[in-house]
Length: 314
Image 1 (cartoon, rainbow, N blue to C red):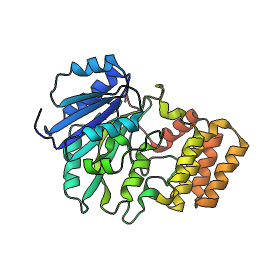
Image 2 (cartoon, rainbow, N blue to C red; image 1 turned 180 degrees about the vertical axis):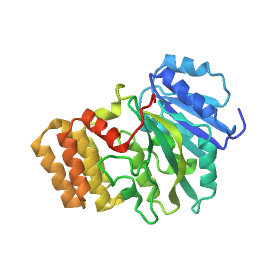
Image 3 (cartoon, rainbow, N blue to C red; image 1 turned 60 degrees about the vertical axis):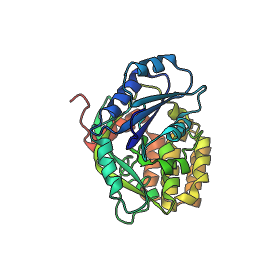
């Protein structure tokens, strides 16, 4: 077995051998050598196991699961196998840039608290355009729940965290595991529960360190999560967010999931809940209305135009 690594990288995957090998190679190509990569294969998948075996790097370990338990469960399994003090996550369709882990490890070691969680900006790559997210970093004294959820414009991305950007102490990941069964907002849920601990702080590396591939033509399981289940999740974590943040998630995230129902009853229910338990702002109301009135494709084109995004092939 190789020497004890400084960072363990956990990659959950199933049924996407070409994508996961690209992800793994990006993790193995870091500027720091003391890395191990743990790929948790989420259920029987001979093609993926064979593709990973062909990489031929002794820093790579493959943990096949007998049955699928979902990405949060696979991440928890990976963290249980991690040997390093810090663990980073990498979704199988994303890539690390070469300086990612070294940069974040330096930020973590300069932290004020015992258990720093370090995220970063990323390059959001779609077939239509590239953009950098988040567009801003947290302001001094800004509640993390509001930074991650409250929009300053009509479109998401002002404050943002994505799983492939997260590096955290392995000890913390075992203390605060990912919520198994949660289909969307997994990184937001985990971050809010983690930073509720007094010895944890959330820090950001300023530069983009991850390529987040969003193939808008590829089916994503998370996009089909029933809005009712996500509504129950939000109500269950209300104690972890400010009223401002609660209203923002209700009207943007839950609203976007429920809008395809085109149900006036659902429209009123979510709006009433946001007003009763949260504190919506003018942009929250405007966001909610455009989500219900504009088709997703049109919203995407308008977003790219207003944000001045460059074409990915340009």
